[in-house]
Image (cartoon, rainbow, N blue to C red):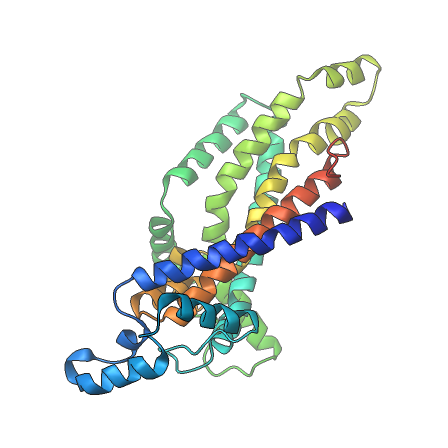
Length: 321
């Protein structure tokens, strides 16, 4: 397991290098540059613009610009945000806790609901309860996230008044107090519920279908023929093998914890990394945009590694070495 992990980690280095080239190239192919997003070209002296581009190195050859950027990036210097006038690390660090809280809460909703509904539907297939869960799943799969978010705000925020419609914490609360954390939890519940319920549908169907398929395998029939209790057959032989596909989703969910749901955060005006990414595109804040893209790419590779390692933990038949 250790040797496999080390090989995979070393294999990430050339992959991240290629990703950095793609990210830098795409940023340069976009209209304008960071200076264009910081100033108004129509009301600024063209000579000043030319001098600033020369000073910032935007007129240097592209290979030289890339080497300067990647060299600073590896050393932890991600540049300065042209929109917030702050270091990119400070801007990302300010939004990161909100996205972590949103992602973890949504994953808790997803896995608890998917496990309960998927287990029930798999153990009692083709019953009324199974058909009801299947209908709810297809409804969840068919509703776009922006429609679900707007409907949730209208119903639970404006009509019922149960949850706030925007923000991450109430105004005027002291950081670190019990009321502060209670307010943060209150603000994150609705967007996390919307984000988690939309993912629950596919997770539930995967678990249900795997339980039904594994219950028909030869080793299950052999266990029943030996007189093994039904509960033990289900918990040891069926359920353990059926949750393996969910481990794959867990690896990618680790990415979702950081990247968040761009659409969900935007609809709920939730100040996380997803909303920051979308804002950086609109304002041409390329230092933030490139940093977040590299961060999401790195976490995608880490998520795949974690999923592969968990395969071997859940199913002993899988040997990584």
